[in-house]
Image (cartoon, rainbow, N blue to C red; front, side, top):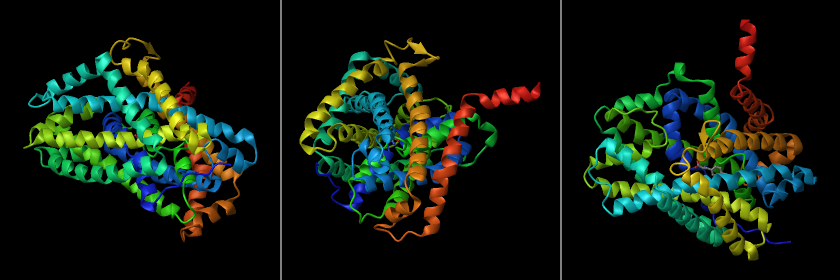
Length: 456
Ligand code: PFF
C-alpha cells in the first residue's frame, strides 16, 4: 500500500483548490458567456447555481475524497465496497484528459500574447486591430502548437514535482498575486467613460434575455468554474488531514471564485461599452477589449503584461489539477511513478489536443453539428460530461454513503451545524439531480416538443 501525499498547510490546500477553480472559466469564459447569455440575468442564475448546486457538490467531493484517502477511481469502489462504482472516477479521468487537451490551446494563446507584448507588437493599435490580431495569432498553426506545447511542459514540470513542492508552492505564489492585480485592473476599467453601462449590463438582470440554452450554459459554467463533476476536488481532498475545516475551505473557495468572475466581468464590460463594442463578441472578448483598455493608460502595456502573466498562472493552476487526477489514478498514488507518468500523460494530452489547436486555422472547416473540433470538445466537456459527472457524484454521495458517516466526516476539523449539513445533503439528494436532469431534457429540446404537443 503506497503512502498518500499530503498538503503541507491548510491555506495551501485552499489556494490549490481555488487555483483549480479559478482559471479560464472565470476570467475568459465567464465574461463572454455572460455577454452572449444576457449579462446580469446570466450572472444571477450562475450565482444561484453556484450556491444551491455548486456548494453542496463541492462539499460532497471534499467529504468522500477525504474519507476515501485514495485515488479518484478507487475511492468510489472503496467507499461503496463495490468495484462497479469505479466508473464515476473513470468518466472523470476521461473528462479531465479531453478538457486539458483543449484548455492547453488557450493557455498557449496567452503565452503567444506575452511574447507579442515583449516584442513590442501590441502597443498603440486600434480596437479593431486588436480584434484582427487575435484572429491572426490563433490561426497560425506552428506558433499555436508550439505555445500549446510550452503550456503543457510547464504543467508537466510542476506536477511532476509532487503535491507539496509543485502544486501547492506554485498556487501559494500565483493566487494572491492574481487577486491584487485584478483589483487594480477593475479600478482602471471603472474609470473609463461610460463604464456604468457595462456595470449595469453585468449586474442588472434583464430576464427577457434568458433562453433555455443560456440556463444550460449557466449550469455548465457553475460546474466548470468550480471544477466539479470530474473528481478533481475529490482528489485534492484526498491529500487532506482530518484537521482541515471542510465547510470553511469550501466557502472560501466559492467566494474567491465568484469574486474573480465578478472582477473579470467588471474589468471587461465597462471597456466593451465604453468602446461601443458588442458584449456578445465571443472568445475574442478578453483578448481584444483588455489591450484596448490598457493601451489607454500610462504604462498600459506593462500592466497588460502583468495581467497576462497572472492569467497564465490562473490557467496553469487549473491545468495542474486536471493532470493531477489522471496521474493519481494511473499511479494509484505510488510516488515513485509520479515523474514518468506525468510526462507520458502530458505528452499524450498535447498530441490529442493538436486538432483542437488547429481548429481556428487549418481545420476551421472541419465541423460536426456545426461546431469546430475545439467547440465540440468544449461543448462535450462543459455541457455534457461535467454535468453528467456531477449528477453521478451527487447520487453516489447522497445515496451510497450513510448520512451519519457523511456528517461525521464533515465535522472533523469543524464545528459545522447539522442544519447546514442537512441543507447540503438535501440539495445533493434531490435538487442537484433534478436540476441537472431538467436542464438536460430542456437542452435536448424535449420541452419544446411538449409545448408543441399542447399547441396542437
Ligand atoms: N475550473 C477551471 C476553470 O474555470 O478554468 C476548469 C476546470 C479545472 C474544470 C479542473 C474541471 C476541472 F476538473
